[in-house]
Amino acid sequence: MNPEVKRIIKDVSEGMNVSRSEIMGRVRMRRIVEARWICWYALYLRGYSMTEIAGIWNVNHTAVVHAKQRLSFWINTRETHTKHVVKNIAHLLSINALRYRYKVALHGDVLVESSRPLQPASIRERALAEVDRGECTFVVASTDASEIKPQLEEAA
Image (cartoon, rainbow, N blue to C red; front, side, top):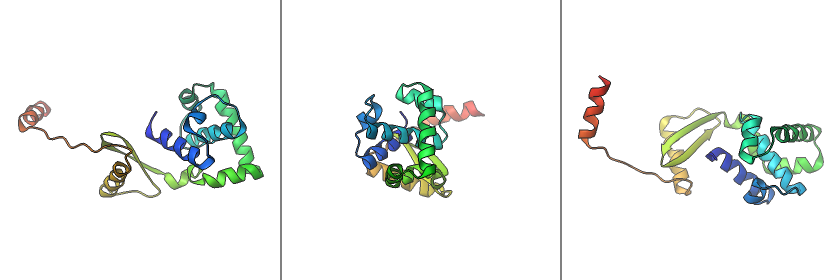
């Protein structure tokens, strides 16, 4: 599971007071199903295919299609319960706010998202903030000059 999916599941679980294992499980209580559907919907808005989402949860892709249709309808009709739920996790459903994504090479996967283009220094700062939060580790490796020389000769 990639870091973007993990982050969405974590945000939804915190916003809806449902555990991660419940979201990933098969329990069909309404609040858990809604949390699961919101995860699927947020991933769909970020460009994941229905089949990819279904593969993550090990369900048939038609379940994801159904969830997307139901949530779209509820959000568009401003159903009271859904409006309250969406308010708690609006940042996940606002795809326009996170148009730019950068993958940073650290030990562990780091995904940096921004509403505007970032300069390389800003990307590095945000990635290091992930390290501070314990989401990944930063590893510095040195290379011996004898290892570099053969690589340069091969490239020439």
